[in-house]
Length: 451
Image (tube, rainbow, N blue to C red; front, side, top):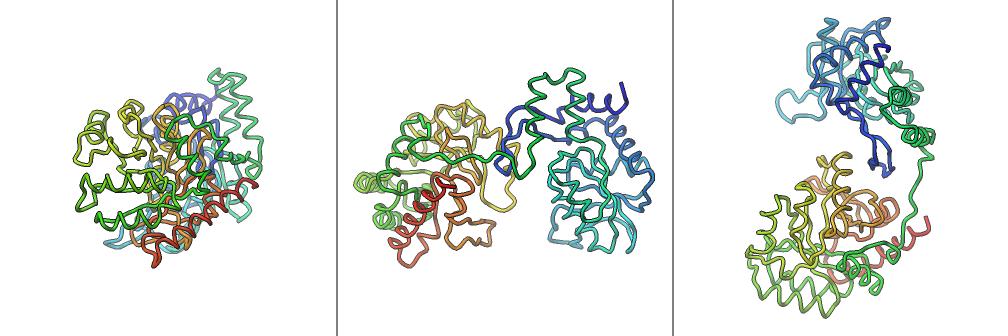
């Protein structure tokens, strides 16, 4: 067995590459997921990796080493300790105080810097790091990468004049794992077939019409029926703090929406009378009541919050939002209510990364209580997709919220229901704004069926 093969097999046992069905940020279904961060927990493998990477660049002259944050930082640090070449640290983001520098360490203008990356896909993170490092007056020409996913990143960087050396390509990894019986013939063929597709030819999913979605949950079926009958996919978010405001808002938008979304714990004068009035308006104007509680605890606590709190959510909410972080068992407490899981958020800097997204979607599909998910990308066809952060203006706010237009979310994400807040309740004419969003949302949905 060659040393490279021995290293790879030992690293594989740490879980650096997983096989299954993973949804990437692009919406593409990938049969593998790469995460080299576990290597930081094995000093011996980290030393071996550092030596392998240094061997790749033994004919390269450089004054400094810099790892692309965050996964490559332990690798770059170990390379620095092994070679006695100084390390500089590139921050992921400006810390906002102190020196506010993006590159930390001792260096001089004009020095050359070797960049270290764990996995290269599109090459975008490397280009961003190159830009930040070169702004400090340093020169970048050479890059060393542990794993090339062979999705165009290396070629892009080489076209721009950079020298890219990689320890493994993904095809080499698959061949080695197959050779030593870590992958079956069938698994190997599936992955190879996926890798043979050029990035731009990765399979795109045709969106499914609402009436053809395989929704089993009775509340989900009712929501789809309302959408088709009212020709509306609009959920209005009533982020208002008094009962009078909410009742007035519900009366004005009720004809144009399929659900009214509330945050009961921000309503300063919440009462049973408010719920009685809202239920009557919802019955008259045909929409569902949606409590955006975002439950996120162990099952027992969630059950108490759902059934025993002063808001008595279980008595009136047709729909609730839940963070699936508590796992499958924690979702079982929401009896007779439609659960919408939060698998991704629309705020800038959200921590719901690709790996969390995949795990959260898997839990959502397994739960009989879940009818859909909140996300900023496509989800499986047996779930309804709810997309917040929708605004005709497609701008943002000072608190990290990022907006998308109705046209974008229906075309690119295959959204089923859009959630609109400030675009409606902050409008000068609430009823007219709701009607405008209803029309634009439905037209965008119909147009997306033909893409």
